[in-house]
Image (tube, rainbow, N blue to C red; front, side, top):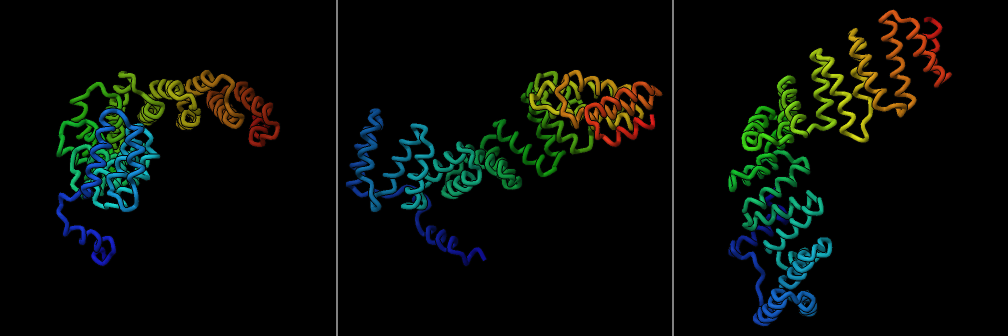
Length: 351
């Protein structure tokens, strides 16, 4: 069906032109005019050059006029102002490789991944087959969750520069997002051989190891990242989950509480969920320590509903320990904070 589309007909017609025909043609008069303008640019007289370009530009003029206007805006970091001029240059001359490439670079810097990837793809089809173009297009495809295409583009970039760490890292991420965990782990091992002090690589490989079902190996990675000063709230919580699942409760409590310090917007939800599981398993000492850590960190700043959940766990732990006074004290505090807490009232009546 593609061969019957307007796009194919247009590309086929273009194929009759020389493959090196990626620059717009100039009349003799335009060539002389633009030579003078370029000399103004080279002598840092850009304002005068801009006036000359705008004066000489017209719908019938060479695509180089809007292209150079776009270049001056680009050079001044006026990215959004430059875009329409590159678009105009492309409208006048569709195979203008440099215009496609610069358009892609601007979309990339503006965080417009889909538009950038499309423009990079067109530049590549016109012969722009260097490492940076493939690599940046791959980043855009990765951001756009097009993981298979991102993998291919990263591999092209690495073929042209096998030593570039950024492209290896991007390829590893693309493999991870496709759940090809063993390949991602192997690639991160290669990256860590080059940069063993990269906490980010240890964390990323740790996540891939979790995907492979090897939690304790992942825990080793998360610990190394922590020792390198690169732990995050997410990584410490993952580490805490691993320890809790393995019954290493003292370590789990340390990690859950330590994770609070790594995120100013941290909530106790995950730690409370773990405390609930510990209580259910009968690991009441660890559960109580974790609740102490939560209360100590938030120090009266818990939401009423969250505080009620914590107090209910306190009551359950007290009941398991045969501490009737402690159970009643926790339930009474719940009722004091919320006189309509029916479940607490029932428990208090039965205590």
